Image 1 (cartoon, protein in one colour):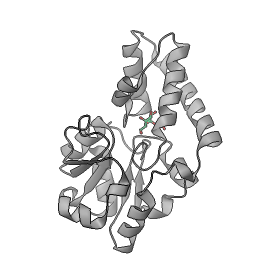
Image 2 (cartoon, rainbow, N blue to C red):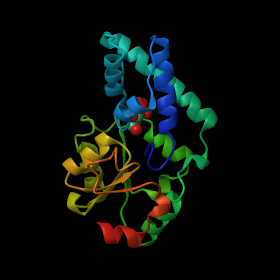
Image 3 (cartoon, rainbow, N blue to C red):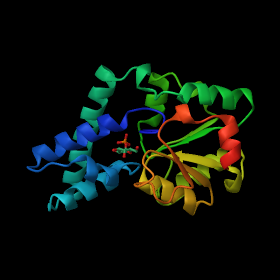
Image 4 (cartoon, rainbow, N blue to C red):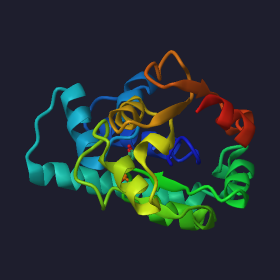
Length: 208
Ligand code: GL1
């Protein structure tokens, strides 16, 4: 979801960066590639390691809660349906018309709130979010659960992913994976697109 369907990854980055600045260091876009698709608690661990800091679980929980508060502040003040990436609605509408089953597989605990706010909930048969999974990407749990909920064999699923860990999760689950972003970064994807404006049902059938 974040960074694939909607440009909410920007607000996660902004909130994480703000948090690191309160801790006396900072993160850049390159480091942020490691955080994409990764759960809140794993992000905290990666960030603290990057800053060379150690914290107790209680302190980590406080930091995670602060980041989430800032993220929700951005969601409530800045996010509108215009944050849905170009081409996404057209493609989802075509999939629905043709009877394809669709699911969101996100590590974010805020996924249900965001799809509601962005008006895209109606396009999905299932939503698997960070509250429903115990194993973070690259473990395929999130996608396997989505496949199970929509009743489709993993081998017949196509995952769209913008995160390195997410591409690996899709491949670990035996699924075809289309990377949304740079092929240089998403090396393990079967194919990459820059935007959903480059995607159509015909193209999908040619590729997968
Ligand atoms: C968590 C992380 C975010 C991002 C998403 C996955 O979201 O905090 O930085 O990696 O997972 O896209 P959340 O905090 O909303 O559960």
